Length: 173
Image (cartoon, rainbow, N blue to C red; front, top):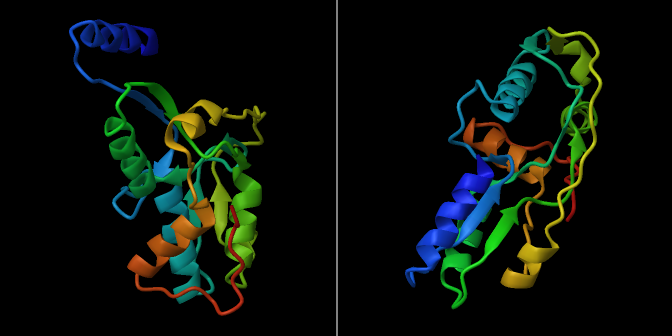
């Protein structure tokens, strides 16, 4: 429970221990296993690039998510710990994306139609939109995440030995 962790950190601080608390939203990297959404999507994209008839299964594309870059979040955590005053922050981009729109753009950037390669196993769901306020984090660090999820996905794809198409358009921050 988040409140229990916060209380523990506050208790530690009472003993003059420099402790920061960071709540991390979804953070992606090349190290994630395929049972996570982004690596699963990237496996399908890579398969479709190799074989135009390739298909894969995903539970649903009907949800919102605030995806960031794990390496960047870890650097932000290090920077927070080096500050003289401890703080509690949220590490997120502040931008929730609708998964279906994200996947459509990701595949289109490679000249593909996601609907030809992805089968959803769940029916249409009711996706709740949310936003994460990162102003407090920006105030403590003086900067926020720079990587967009499209850029992270292109890095993952490159690690899978695929190069982005020459006309790929990436999400700008």
